[in-house]
Image (cartoon, rainbow, N blue to C red; front, side, top):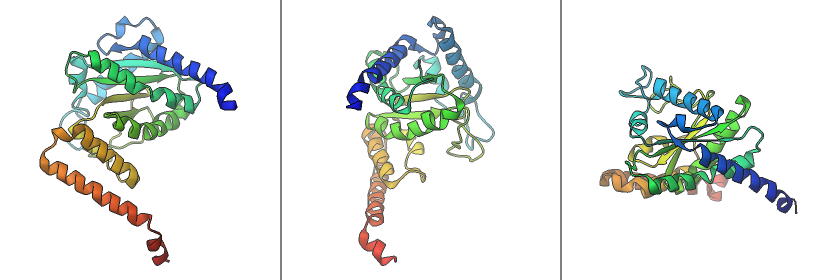
Length: 253
């Protein structure tokens, strides 16, 4: 019965946040079009960090080129959209429910976007989030949302000032340590293999990510890479079965 009584206020918060997202939606080159000064300041903080850090090389990156080779082309296309919503007094469950609606926003933008679809990106800035909540509302939320977003053919990246995520090519750089918290969403591309099948994830999650990756970016991959990924999926499935085999557990005692 509590769920029924609470569904009204919760739904209202979700709807209010989605209205905020729609009202604040703009290209990164058109931040000046937004009337809300707080939103404008948030967007500028995010974009300034991208221009200062992400769009340039870094000595500790471990490879040549910009920290994110796509950031500058995406911004200049222009194909980078910003949106925001207030989550200062929001509980975690409501926050997740709102973020689960964002793929629909992305798909709607994509349907009317006339530029390069492979560059289309959406950054979502949760306003009013205290630093003590970054680990939960950004890092933990990302781990929950990523498998669902990948099912929809999307990748989601998590950024905030206290990020402890290290670079894919170097342990001495923290590429997701942004000046303000936000999520970046875009279509899955061939190079996303760098961000999936990581040791920190469970075998089940890695299988899911690889299957989604093949479903979304498979047509962009050479036959040899497709075969390698399929073999990797089977390897992980065998590992998963072995880890959950009661006979193996008994034998190891």
